[in-house]
Image 1 (cartoon, rainbow, N blue to C red):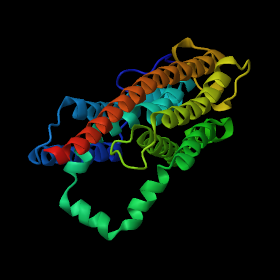
Image 2 (cartoon, helix red, strand yellow):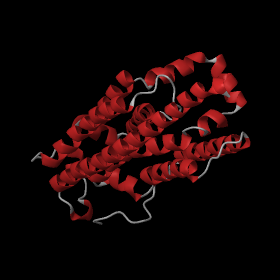
Image 3 (cartoon, one colour):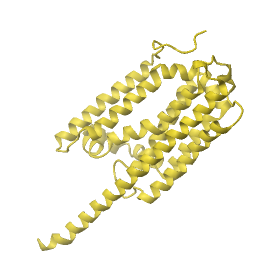
Image 4 (cartoon, rainbow, N blue to C red):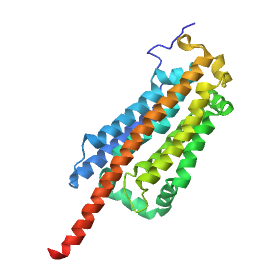
Length: 281
């Protein structure tokens, strides 16, 4: 029996390809519209968005996907982390102002005005009291061994799992990054608190898998031992990888939130100065 899937074991996911193509066309149109409105939009926007798309494509179609659902728990947990914690913030950083505010088409704006319930729903889903518990419950819930194994063995549930992880990640990271600053945008301190709470949920899964002394996922015990890795070692590697990525994401997010908070305070101070000196001009 082969001990490793070959490079030819890519997954054919036509729905994903269609969605990524549609997202690319939509995003390019937003970039053009934002530039036509006089806003400088460059690699600091589209670089993030396209990197997120590339990671989504590789995560769900490359041999990583084959390894994840037929060989190693490590690869599956790696997918979880990418879908919930890496791809969403990249996409959102690509959409941040002025792309989404100046690039949205008039037709899209009119549609949103005719369907205010959509805006209210999106606003509700990005409330800290909603998106942080939702993200935590999604990450922990899909990692529970009976649910995890059952979803892995049933493709429709596997797709639901991935959709929920990405959706929960989009909601939480939208709140944390605040790509379109509003009066409801969280302060730097509050965002750090919510970020810490969410990292606790991810750490709970990662640390459990790293330090537990027995295998938790019977399905993966029964799989061929990819790369010659024992089932328990595979499980511990999955947990350790999650912990490393969570630590990296936390450190990077803290730095981004801190710099963003300083920038917002600088812009607010500049606005106050302009308002103060305006009457004397």
